[in-house]
Length: 246
Image (spheres, one colour):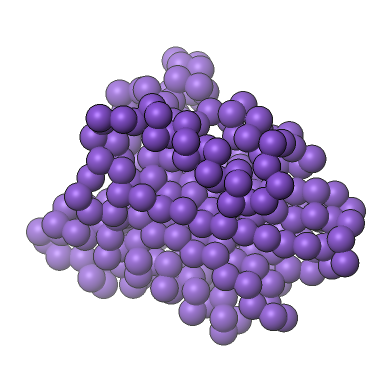
């Protein structure tokens, strides 16, 4: 059925509070679930929102199966209602959310916000999620190039997030067949991908035998570029799938 390995990393960066959350779990009969969430909101509200979203997705994963990608809507709406329920007029916390599921040699994922999922095949980046942000819209309008998102003035302005309203719109990816190939997935918050380019992700992946080595190489780049900076929380989960291994 292929060999699946994973590793997760989170750090507060230059901030006092880490408002990111992550999850990596392997369940017999249910497969693999990986998750990253980046909380938004002052007074610790962001941390509360991302942790709650993580808990809701974990409980959903361990209690019910997703048979079709669109069923992610049920899980995300459940998380959305839970975050809305703890909001106050003073703290309207929100969170991004990206979730990957691997089961029966298939992968599927969904996201909302600007936390990203990157999908690599045989060491080459083949697709990535689309940020729900003002800066991503600037790319669509031809105002900036995709690589300019990292330094754009409106990069942190999100158009969609868990907790942003009663109804949410997430992006759901169709099922991907993993059989017979080597695949890698990187889920990360903007505090991580802001300092590691896609080309560097590929380069470090090709040099790494394990998800842990891959993340460690990318973290070294991040730390070098954020030294003495008030950088954001940064979080990543890496998953490797070796298709020919039983």
